[in-house]
Amino acid sequence: MRVTVPASSANIGPGFDCLAVALDLPFHLDVGESRGAAAKLEEQHPAFTAFRKAGGAGDLFSETSIPPGKGLGFSGAARVAGLAAASLQRSGSIRFPELLSGSGELEGHFDNVAASIYGSITATTGTSVIRLLCPPTLNIVVWVPEGKTSTIKSRTRLPSSVPLETASQALARSTVLAAAIASSDLATIRECCVDDLHQPTRLAAQPDSAAAIQAALDSGAWGAWLSGSGPTVAAFVEKDTTDAVIASLPSSGHSKLLKVAQCGITVS
Image (cartoon, rainbow, N blue to C red; front, side, top):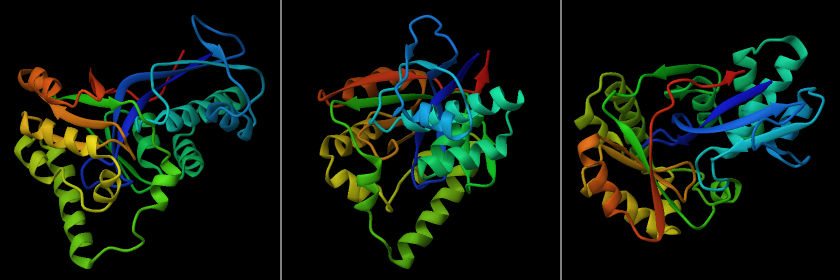
């Protein structure tokens, strides 16, 4: 069988560890034999370790265009695929609550795996997931620089506490942002797609990513954020501003125009 899982861009605006969008960059996992250009996985691969942990047996092969270490949910998609493949092999079905909890525990957070499992834009607490339909006029531009980021190391640099005012503002923005996405209110998406919890610390070490966020906003994006822990930057764009946004982004990285993956995990 082949299990296919989309990439993700997490931490949309103030939605730290809870709000993410699925992207049409697929991770394909083949069980038993390879299809096409899929390569055999080694034991340390996150899909392989998840598959074995869940009781899966046999060889695994993968094919993907998701770059690892870039903040586009490579490890999350791989772990979702591995756990789902093991569940299908054992029982012939996928239990989605168990898939969410298992992949989130392996990943260390739940936002990106929720988007990869369910597709579109997801808001999650780790146990509950609400799937939001992305406004139909919006696509995603991602700007991907050369460097990589370790999510584990990046998280250790984040402050252990923030002022009450900062926390209150983040709660207000994330609540209104989710409502704005659900109602296709683009102006409010732009107003609320701002973060004060993790981005200031991470962007201080990634000045080109900070410049990319500002350039995207100045060129007409309806929101821009540090994708996951970076260094990739993602932005909501409409068709008539896509070229201007891409042209404005720093030359130290390359850009891709992606669609929101409306479907999450699929099996063939």
